[in-house]
Length: 108
Image (cartoon, rainbow, N blue to C red; front, side):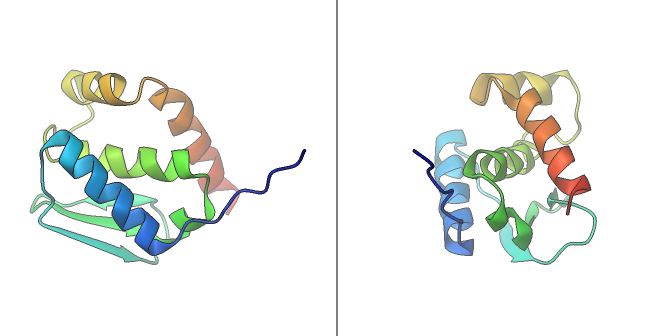
C-alpha cells in the first residue's frame, strides 16, 4: 500500500514548536515563518526563531528536527557537547535526520 505524505501547514509548524517549547520548558521570544534562501531555520541571540516556509514540504520528522535544533539553541547557543547531548536525549536519531535535512537542502 502506498501512503502519501500529508503536507504540513504553517500552523502545523507552529503547533510542533509550541509542543516542544512546553516539553523543554523554554519559550522563544518570537517565532516567524518566512521564505529563506540558504537555511531551513535560525535562532537569533535575542531568542527569535525563524522557520523556512519550505519546511512544510518536508516529512514531519525533518521539520520537527529543524524546530528542536533551533529551540535547543535557547539553552545551548553553539553546537558543542551540551547541545549535542540535548539533541541525543530528546531525538536520538538526530544525526540521521540532520543528514537527510542537508540532502533535502541540496535538492531544492
